[in-house]
Amino acid sequence: MTEDHVTDPETGNVLDLGFDAYAVPRLPMIPEIDALAVGIPDPIANNLGVKGVGEPPIIPTPAAIANAVANAIGVRITDLPITPMKVLRALGRIE
Image 1 (tube, rainbow, N blue to C red):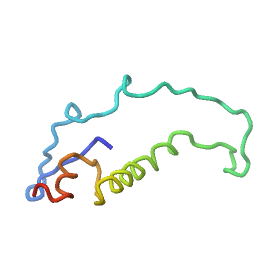
Image 2: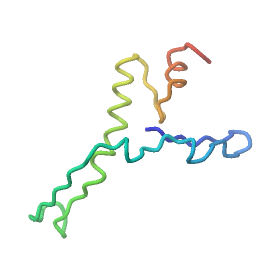
Image 3: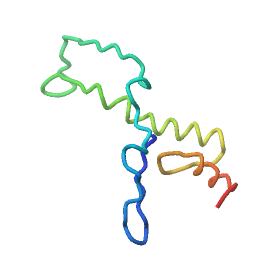
Image 4: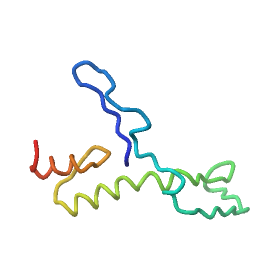
């Protein structure tokens, strides 16, 4: 939700300032996670009986946040990240 890759549409040059400019989540920003191992295979999930644990929380989160923003401001922003500048543009406050 915070990373954005920007290129010049005319030249194709990368305009990003690199990873130093990204607000990549760092350890102090991430809540403590208690991982629990369940020793019972799930034969319905797949032939190994295993399920992924990393993907489920990251797939719906951006959509949920985008829906919350759309509900709050009354305008849908369709590309990520949702920045203050994009919100102001969507509201017609700036061009």
